[in-house]
Image (cartoon, rainbow, N blue to C red; front, side):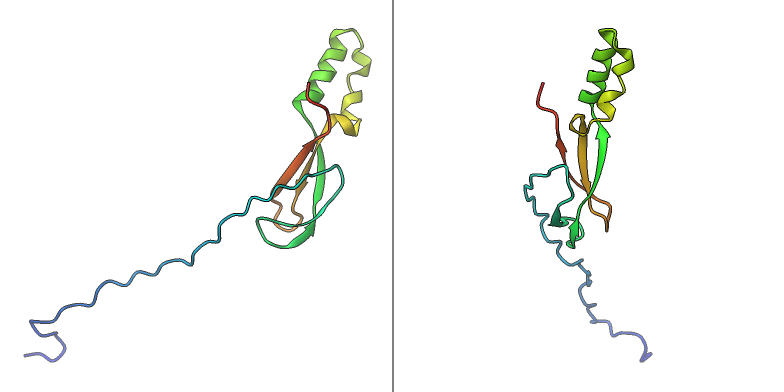
Amino acid sequence: MNKDLPSSNFIPPPPYHIQPPPVPPHRNIVISFGTNSQLMVCSYCGIRVSTEVKSEASIKTHSIALFLCLIGACFCAPIPYCIDSCLISKHYCPVCKSFLGQVDNLPRI
């Protein structure tokens, strides 16, 4: 009998599965964002950051510009794109570039 081969009554060990470490649950923290950068802990990378704010036009901004064109004030149509209160302020993490939240500066229509 060969010494390298297991005996006939050999039972192999159970399979060993490597499990990934548990992922901590994603915390949903409600933060009221404003138009200025805010100091906070990023919920994605966990680093304390001052948010990066980018202003973008919204559907309300486009609607105001369209309304101005419809009433004959086409020369005023670009104005809503230059006024901060007509734009959405979006907050991003400067480290991981994740979207953190936004604030719509226009009141609900």
